[in-house]
Image (cartoon, rainbow, N blue to C red; front, top):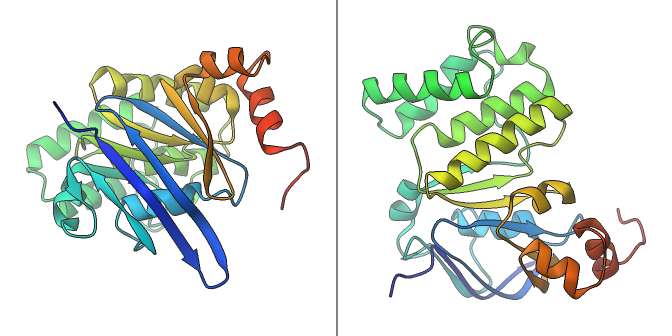
Length: 246
């Protein structure tokens, strides 16, 4: 039987007096588009950072693509692409130069890098702006170039941490179409987002976490039916409370 793409087993991560992730266990299947949802401070980005090997767990274990993240980090890094919450770009390089830099860091063959760069710039509507310095880009354009940088090396598993934040509706829907294509290519995707309609539209399953614990898991339609709400946003509010959080 094929192992799940991602296995999180009783993961806990503490920072001084704060427990960011508290005994979290979940699995993401190969080719699944999984939404990791939660209020600000729920632990979503901490989970992503542990899965990428950027943070060590306080306890518990995580595996990605069948590899233990702590014991085989190089193997894991070969499999994954990461689009972080804050756009990580070099403002004095052009859009194309940013993408090519990341492709070269992954030691991509030059012809494949060129082909993938052209294809992704086209899909993200950035071909005309590819020669401009990224420092001149809008926030939404920086997010799109960041997404291309994360995926130019054609990873099997992608972590997309709020990829559409600060985007106008047209750009957001273009990214939705792009994420759907990743699923058609049988890539495994973990998506974090505060846009519940995005998760409802795209995800096979969602896990809702609050204060580092998993409080609900299922397909969006299943959760809407189970909690007798009209959409996923109302389910989210019912489970996490209506009080505005810092």
